[in-house]
Length: 544
Ligand code: VG1
Ligand code: CO
Image (cartoon, rainbow, N blue to C red):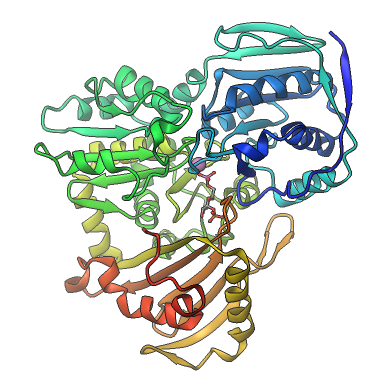
């Protein structure tokens, strides 16, 4: 076994986005593409000798190959210890859990999350630091800078190791431990929630639920936790086997893509509760009988009822939400008398607040919620939180939702995504709108008067770092809001996301369909940015 120094040159475009580097499998398969990026992560870390890592991914096509390459490179770069999930599998939250539990220096998660997989699909690499959370902007910028000056990478000349057999292998001076990807995470969940109470709910003959793992990473986790530890009937978890192409589906838990689950919810034997997770297990969608629980409302409800859960019985230090997320959780924070922070989109902005002890819960409108138990959003955690609430409050999910609206009012929310838009056209639309921001206050748009308009800029209260250009916000005098931003996770053209929300507290008007309740605001948003006019799009591709 010898260390080989391979000469290379910088490859353009290796810039991490909202959540790691995401490219097509075709691009990742180009000679040196994967190796260049991994070496750049190691270079940004500095001297790797003596350091430790966790490695695993969501099981998509290229996952196993990439894991073998990364192990050879970690060994060549002098890492002391690498823990790798059996089969090269690890959900994003489980990787965060393992980093924290074993005091590792960081982790590499192989995933493009909700992006489609397979040879024609996408692949991705995320790097997490020693707190278990996604690398902050300062680190991703250092990695990107390293990609631009790379001239060689190091790799150990050694064959693939058996990733399916738990145990220890030595590569050069690196100890590689193949670990059970589920055990540490399942144990952590058991320490947070009232498992006996959830088990009695799941054993009740009138409570039927379904968890759709969408052939992505959460299958093995959900089987272990829901069916084995909590005794849910076999078959509760569907699409449980991780497949390299996610069975041809799109592992994005929303009403459009979790079709099997939606069909079961509305089938002959309607279910009391349904949930789904995404490619790498960090997101969740939760459904009650006949109702979809918007992630913004879900976060608010978890916050309002947190003390029911053993792990949060002592109360919450504070809450944070991403800027486009509705302000439903702000109302809960105000009532609890705790701080509520507004951060840019992406989980990396929550890490400092959690490390500083300023927040306990946080979430995003994009089906992500989590707490300071780890430093990632956590799909199954949210599902267990909901089950614990239903069991402890002895109320169905839809009643918990309705009572929440009656008490706090409802923040109607929707997100409209325009996918695969021409990148130049999308940038021009955003630029034109940005230039008009100063003139908007006081103007009337479709019956709404603009109170303020800005390009969201965040100053991290912990380290003072500034993140500018995080989305265009139009705030109206009645509290309604429109936000425009471009996605940072796509691989084809640009995706324009437009977020609409409006508060309603009239008890008689809490049960409207969101698209209806927001119709005039949506029309105003289209007109203001010129979506139909400039992009030629009459309808969004995905409505959440
Ligand atoms: C999207 C979501 C964002 C989320 C990110 C990563 O980013 O909007 O809230 O944090 O995906 O989630 P963007 O830039 O496409 O809007 V995941 O589950 O892909 O790691
Ligand atoms: Co994800």
